[in-house]
Image (cartoon, rainbow, N blue to C red; front, side, top):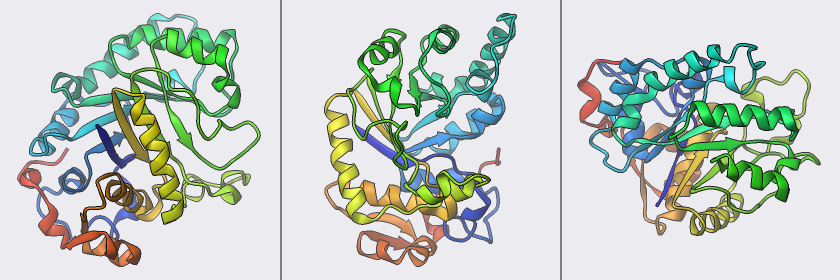
Length: 304
């Protein structure tokens, strides 16, 4: 099965094009997203240890959509900060993180834990040791590795990644000599496709912010090419997840709906009227609905 959705849901610039500016009582973004897509990445789990109470609330919000699944980005302490001299610190932190995300796992809704590294993370003994520590601490979870340096995609490194129990993400981002190839061999049971956009001008600009780098709308021809790549990944995977991370001003959701249309036999998909207003080309592939009409049964529950 192929599931598609955005990376994260808490963006101020989604107010208006995605979420209503005037919100109903007990509003939560997942009430809307669960009616539009069947996958979403938890982005907040990268910046802070998730709370089990919030995870339980997310489970309740999507309960009416039986095919909906989550991915969770692993806490940045494990991927972007030095390894502590006393590994017991990591062990304690890992247990805390796992407890916070446990409600998703217990309900069978956690399809991936995304272990994301920057392009500066290159293959060497220290890097492999770090990956080994993470694999041990989070054993039993569906670990998906996102690495952005090209050397990771050569045969010796691919073997190492698979041997440690990771699935390897297929990522789309602006081309560069040290970035991953457009396609590579499948590693692990989870086929993971992550779309960051192709805004080369901003991606490599010194001082560019997050919104600058991820400000990109994939064109229909680009999405057609990506759909072929997704199908190829799906043929080699037990489960395939597609995350659109070109999040600025709702572009990730617009492209996610386009991909759902392409991968779903070109049958029309539901979309908020405001999103179609922001992206008029969606009119040809969507069933336009008012945002309040799109909220599922969970909209009356208490927010996280």
